[in-house]
Amino acid sequence: MPRYNDYFGPYGGRYVPEVLQAPLKELEQGFQDALDDPEFIGEFDEFCRDFIGRPTPLLPAKNASKALGGAQIYIKLEGLANTGAHKINNAAGQALLARRMGKTRIIAETGAGQHGVATAAACARLGLPCVIYMGEEDIRRQHPNVYWMEMYGAEVRSVTSGSRTLKDAVNEAFRDWTANSDKTHYLLGSALGPSPYPDMVREFQSVIGREIQEQATFPIHTMVACVGGGSNAIGFLSPFLEDTSIRMVGVEAGGRGDGEGNNAVRMADTGRPGIIQGYKSLFLHNSDGQVLKTHSISAGLDYPGIGPQLASLGEQGRLEFTQAKDDEALEALKFFARHEGLIFAMESAHAGAAAMKLAKEMRPDQNLIINMSGRGDKDIFISAAALDGENWKRFLQKESRRKYVD
Ligand SMILES: *Cc1c(COP(=O)(O)O)cnc(C)c1O
Image 1 (tube, rainbow, N blue to C red):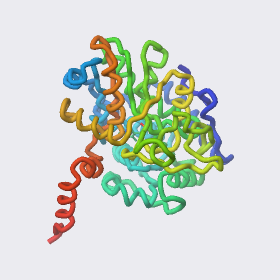
Image 2: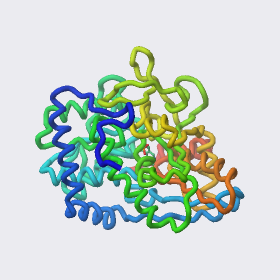
Image 3: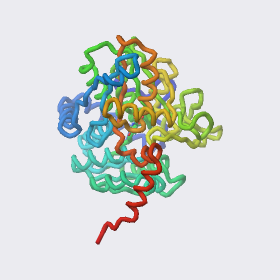
Image 4: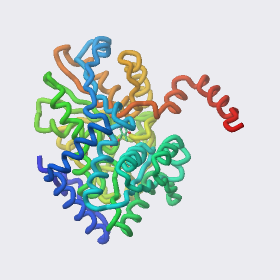
């Protein structure tokens, strides 16, 4: 596969103001040079091994397979990566690249806070100062992640424009980058945005798929991943795209069900082509180009757009898309906890839910791999409220009355 593409079918591109063309060209060149430099590849591999804890295991999920009575299920445990999810792979790769390019400051955007946490951790490790833009509304909703980012030494900057959420944080990060690109790297968090980000994020995340190539000593029939912006899915799948004997399934957030504002499904003839935040892809937006509200129980899957490569692979039919609803994700969370001792991140539980259905339709001599993109400790405020509401409320009330300082 070519390393670098402006476009994936009709999607992708670099739709940015003139002032950002030069820094994006510089980044593209820096990225290409780094990939051709064995020393850089060595640094990335070492960081992955010593800091992230890679390779992450590929677990034969024997109990789950038996309980479902279909395919043999394997689970790639990205939740065991340091900071608890796949996001650190990209954060590490871009932070190392920034250092190689002589950048001395990192900025990033974050919505739910997971990408901010991964970026802050990678920057702490590399001694790079880091500013995380986060909507005021998201700061309020995601207090624990703000706490961890600051613990890692990052500065979290509250964005008070617009809806005070992720898209406003992205705008603010671009504004900062426009003014400071000579010494600052903008560390974007998913496989989207203007070129070369979709390629760059895919390359750093494809460590997931490359490890599976080594670990899977069996024929792979089906691979399943959840799709927010698309970084865990493309990293998991990209080394296997040429092997057309493998069925690939991306799982979107079905939320509460059909209807505008109830889900974040873009790939069921629901998304329309558009150019938003520097790239062309399928988005949930109205005919005036206004981005629509989305809903998902998982904070990482409620993004209104999808990475351009995944949109293109979906339209070509190479990648199938399906959905899991909020309650199906919660069921999958319980199922894998009981049967395998794994707490899936709410995002990953969407992949788990779809895989449970797919596995049942397959034969026991066939193999299915789920990408568990993260672990679910971070979701306790959501999962406990949804599954054990009364007890959880009582606990929180007690905590709120506790005296923290004597
Ligand atoms: C952010 C996140 C996602 C969604 O982002 P992608 O770019 O689609 O991978 C999925 N799982 C976890 C655990 C996340 O933190």
